[in-house]
Length: 273
Image 1: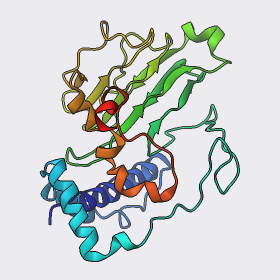
Image 2 (image 1 turned 60 degrees about the vertical axis):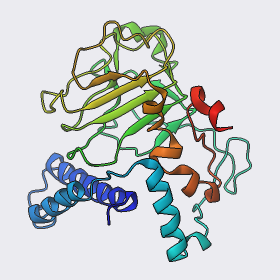
Image 3 (image 1 turned 180 degrees about the vertical axis):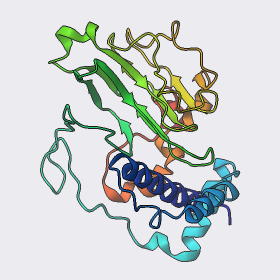
Image 4 (image 1 turned 135 degrees about the vertical axis):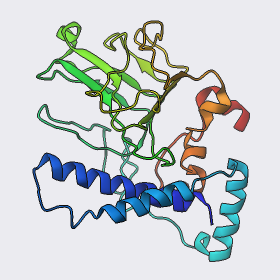
């Protein structure tokens, strides 16, 4: 049965295998091949393609509701292991929404939809920063990095010298890299090119890099690179595909966790009130 749940699980499995394979290569682990069987990778890769989600989102939500009712999954609340909140209302203290990644961090991996975040660019040894580097090895994987209603600015230690550091929004990692910036403030530290190629390892025509209703001095697309995979999204319906309510089926999964989130894009939220 073709459904989003299966596709998400297959995507996660394929991503984990690829991440593990890449890490083994970087760490020079030479006996990883028996663990990461090529046959297993190919089977999952093919399954992602076979199970490709082709249903419209309205049909998906109807099918999901029927599935939950049929299996009684809806009777069991989905509980977060812990909840932290900036105002102290969580059960694990106060969280100031700050994630610090050291200067020596390499290929740090984070999986999430980022909403209402402040993303700070730091000074690096090579004077080059990339805010995201999303990886997909199969165009049918559901994974994507979404930056929504956030701001990308220079860290205090970089601000005095930010003109000497080139900061890019994205760098493609694998051929089907996919990242979108939605309704986000981009400060003047963003390089006019916007995006940076990764040692010619990715096909720049098969990636998907989108922007929608961003603002700030670094948001102009006038001098952006002219890759065919880069898109200025002008249609709110298209942009809404990456909203939490649609992309993550958030309204079905998140309310019981107590995690705060915005279901819709700002510009289209009035139609859902």
